[in-house]
Amino acid sequence: MYSEKVMDHFQNPRNVGEIENASGVGTVGNAKCGDIMRIYLDIDENQIIRDVKFKTFGCGAAVATSSMATELVKGKNIQEAMQITNKAVAEALDGLPPIKMHCSLLAEEAIHAALWDYAQKHGITIEGLKKPKSDIHEGEEAEDEEY
Ligand code: FES
Image 1 (tube, helix red, strand yellow):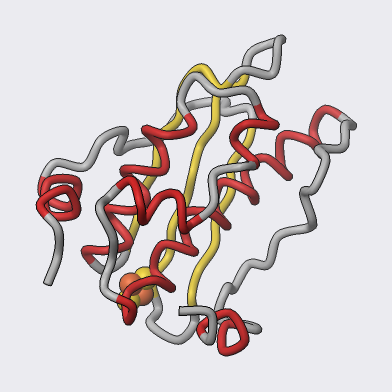
Image 2 (spheres, rainbow, N blue to C red):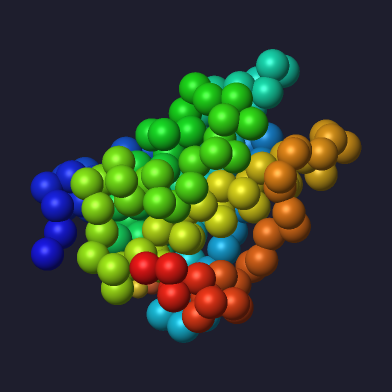
């Protein structure tokens, strides 16, 4: 049911932990399943994501997608990080079962929430970034229909 990459990132998740004095922190949850994810970003003066860590209290797919998402954003600038969608994360993992696609949204939304926090702290706007929801379950039905 799961690809080898999903199993690998679930069993050996990359970038687990916290960053003290992070440039941005984002937490999102899905009230439907009760899973929660927090992302910490360390962003340098050139707006490059120098380091990223995550904590996920959630299902295996949520752990694997957060792990892959952190790998994908590390070393990118904040505009590039905005392009990393949950679909890109799922593709990098060689796919997710359709019923688990919503889990990958946690990672995308948590990154956006951390970027939002960074933007707020620095008084900047990031193109295409909207105020994050703290619960991705809102409006999820509409998004589910895409898969
Ligand atoms: Fe909740 Fe996967 S079941 S994030």
